[in-house]
Image (cartoon, rainbow, N blue to C red):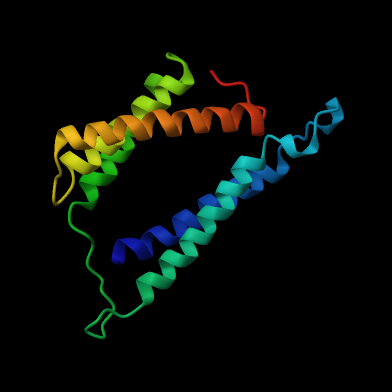
Length: 159
């Protein structure tokens, strides 16, 4: 839990910066575009959610364990999962987005993420065939949902 206490201020400051950056972005109303399509809306929402998550993480890290003491041990395998997340997200952002259609890139990312975390980095790995089938379904459905949301709700032209 010590890692949680060190992470809280980083997440909170990052969330506050995202909230501030989204709020100060130029508005599109001057171009007769609907006010709800402000470019900073998503960063503001994500920043606020990240700040809220930091507060919840801090509260949980302060809660005593069943033995009555505050647990200060870091979870096992946390570094491996952190580096896997960084690697997958970097591959998505730098290697897939912009080089293949956005829905395909997002589906590949989701499928890879599910397989890595359920089969490779899990403490109790599950069947690769079953996980792959579920990951493909999740990847296709969520990729379509995200693409439609950005295209029609947020009016964002996707790469």
